[in-house]
Image: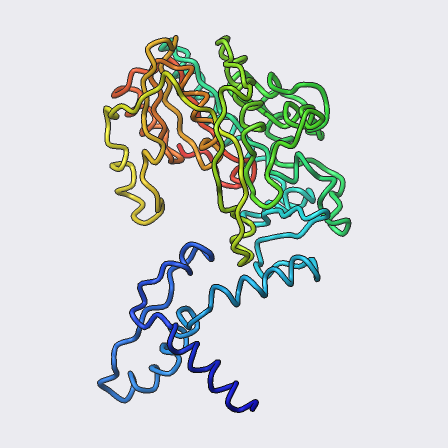
Length: 378
């Protein structure tokens, strides 16, 4: 009986195997390219390497792989409170946190800026601020807080921050000419750290009492958190903020990135603003030219959030951003007469090139806190 059952299972796995190698489940769930089917060997050296290459292909494409990984991941997350991914930390109450880009080291105060790095950041931010001010353009460098910065109470007790300051604390203090200290839970900090830097940590920490601001199983803020960030941005720019109520919101389904990285095939739902004024519009410059010196660096299109126009808007926006702008964009598009979103970390020359093409009145560079580990490009 058992041998027959074993053979039946093996046969089912082989029958369901994707021998073409076309499945994108590895790319979607693990964010890496799957191993290709190796060519048949035509030499002794190729024959010696063939078993390893074929094994890698089969490991990525065998039948029922996604279902088996999802089952294993659910067991690990629910029962063992562990993640199968090295970049996912399992917190309390089902909360998951991203540990890549040295973000946990930053949370633990173990990855501070050097004095030279702080000087470089301050010089480049002041350079941008002065250049835009001379042309009558408002400039903001907006930092979206890491999830563990806003919700440290759900982090594992074994990960307790030590003495010292996070990188963003250091940068705020350097721009303000003071001593670095933890300001994330203090008063509204949107004016801290110089005119160009918009530090959203205290804004979001203070707003937690009004509702959840980040997804439990995703690394990003949710619609409520994005709206709080949006209000802080337009407040700094002296622009009116749109209201947020049930009549202006629609619902959508998403695949949480941290659950997906852990192999769990799960979904969440959230709200998003239903835009009524903003409509898609072409960009004046093909921002893909920015990638010529960095082939393969950016897997998504530069305009994965389409440029928009809204006749009732009062200003023109160019925004360089990462994935945290996805939830911000509906609110910004309904606020600005023209909004152009470029998913890139630009050099200063590329920023100037975009300004010359789009003639904005506002330029925003948005970056998640953990990405401060990457310097502002000259």
